[in-house]
Amino acid sequence: MTLIEFEALASEKLSINNEESRTDFLRLLNAGLLSKVIESLLGNERELNEVASRSYYHNNGFLKVVLIEKRPQYSVRFHIWPEESFQAPDVHNHPWDMTGLLLNGSYEWPIYTFNQALGSCASVNLFECRYLEDYSGHSFHNLDKVILNQVDKISFQEGDMFQFPQTQYHSVRKENSQPAESIVITGESVGLSANVITNRNMMCSSIFKNSPVESAFLQDKLSSFLERRLF
Image 1 (cartoon, rainbow, N blue to C red):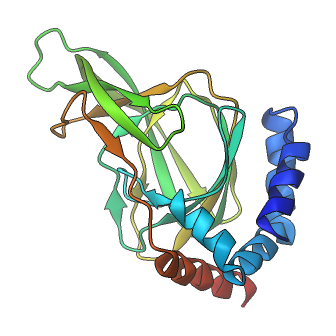
Image 2: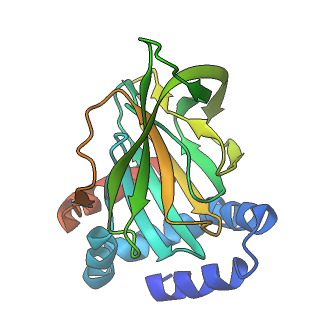
């Protein structure tokens, strides 16, 4: 299936973008459609270059392969996580609900709430992350000092599907050295910003553009996934 055919099918299936339609489309992807799309990409240099041009390493340590970019309506992203153990540096929410499926591997999401710091020495920084209108970059803007409270932890194994609301805050932790990939469909965006909570030093108000990956690099990553998927 070509990328154009895939986009047409996704736009049809997600014309009403809600939890039910995203779940149904993920099941279709998991039943073989995703492998067909990736096989087509690997055999089509133009389409591979197109996907590579909008795919990049996220600040939280994973490779975000943007198969379809139709935000604010929806997007379809393929996430490739580091094989080694890691802890994402930032806690964050999203400007959209999302539905996802862990295709292989395992990881966990610590879930957080926060309170205003009120002078506490254990505080961390709360930033607003503002996206460019075409989602090609972002900027950070300082909001407050807060105290993080971990209130839950969700563990995911291969085959698990998840629904995640835009109001919830999480990070990602992976405590194994196995490959892990997931596919995520975003709901309709409610704005052009999210919040990030971190103890990292952020350069505020500067625009950080996404750095696209090379096509050959993406080809290698997708080929490795497909080999695991098919064999």
